[in-house]
Image 1 (cartoon, helix red, strand yellow):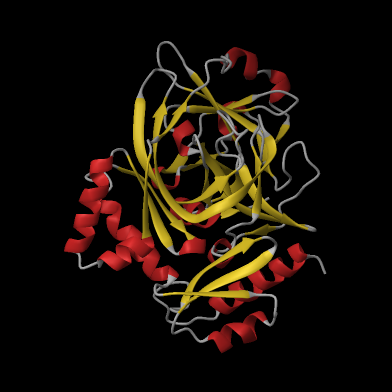
Image 2 (cartoon, rainbow, N blue to C red):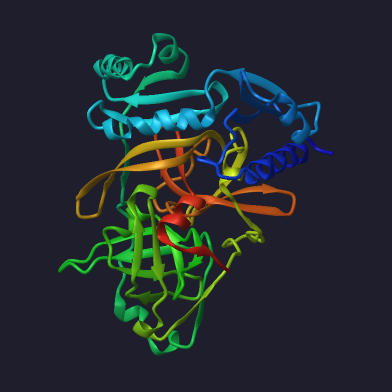
Length: 383
């Protein structure tokens, strides 16, 4: 058995164990503090009073490495979330849970904020020892996203033709989606289809909210041509995601959902659960933008809040907080236009949908979790 296969089995065993918890305030056991993969080894962190025998029985593998700390994963998340109301006050532009060290990494815009945060934590009865052991600080700025200057213009008269009306268009994950506003002088943007989805009444696609927020018409671009849709949308800024409904009444075309990733031979076979997402630290993920496809990167944090400043084609800047993303290292070739694309974990024949591409910063990349997206938008993955 390969190390990768063994690690996947261990992750599945842990996820199954979490799924059996009843009447739980969180999705984790109270003595669980984190999981990460390092040097092809499965590492689990438990609180010092943990029932180690329980985990040894669940995992049933002597190669597992055990670590201990004084705070559970749930408590770490709770502490980070407590700070959300104070991000602007303390100039916090990112707050990441670092699984392997049981710490909260805060990125701030100036040194003075670090002192202010420490004093604030002490006022909330956090000890110096706790702050030193479970907080780290770094200087940085918000992630800046700008519409690329070479985004092509779209002419409706070229799109809505008799030849288009009988065509069946497939909304492949990884396919380009273009947007156009309805100003007197129209402007354009491009993103990537994340996955096909459906509400209780209609089907459509999910892509990045920061793309969709400045456009009112959306266009597909399969190899055979484009078609236009003046679609209804459902959006979630905090999870940087938008559902765009198919609308055949606008131009007469028919759209088909799919789980086949565009320009690949890969098909999404599974959708990640919350338990799955809690055990992917250190694993390699695959990112499929319509410009840069199958870009790999390693999970650095399983839960990161970050600030995005998005500059549209009209020069309008929108700053907003994106919550509970997966932070990635190494997927540096991702760029403008790849936003919204699908992100997967791939092992053997399994292609597990993890989420969608949110943003590429100067050091890290950020992924919206599929569980947050579907819950916030009220959709399910289909195809």
